[in-house]
Image 1 (cartoon, rainbow, N blue to C red):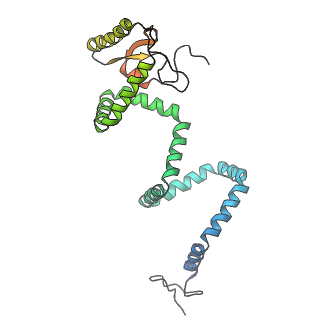
Image 2 (image 1 turned 120 degrees about the horizontal axis):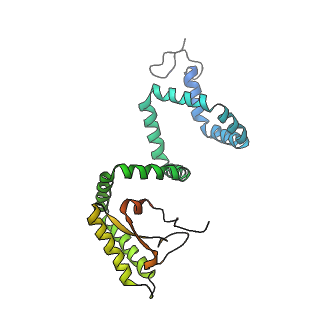
Length: 221
């Protein structure tokens, strides 16, 4: 009786000195490209059918996945990390799609965290600014250039300066930072507002940081 040629196996060999298990593994490795192509063609031709089956068995499938993960979580995490390192572009695309799909929910959670953790938020921002001074300088320069280009000749500089002085005064009075906000944002994919006195208001820093640049009062729908 011949024994499987794989070291440590000890099972009976069928052909080529391999047992049934290792023979099948060798066959799959040798025909992996053909099998992948066949599976891809099948997936494309039965796309809708597979979606219905997946939806019907979603609960059972999730239970199986959780059970398999619980058996060997370290192995699963290692496999996931290996796949992510081998497919960075797919990972980025997946994260972008996920963020776009759940953007409102994510922003809501971010605003809630910022509201509950103002000191941590301030420390994180300060740490990032120190570590990325070049990016901060480029951002500030772009902001100044945008303000300069968005300031018409008829803008009242006295009232504009007064708005910034009011922001500093409120910061001292209330003990937290206030900023001058552009009601219609200076930089937006939809519209670009002007740096004029009628487009300015003084609001708390946290409100200004969480405000989107695509929404403003009385905007057309």
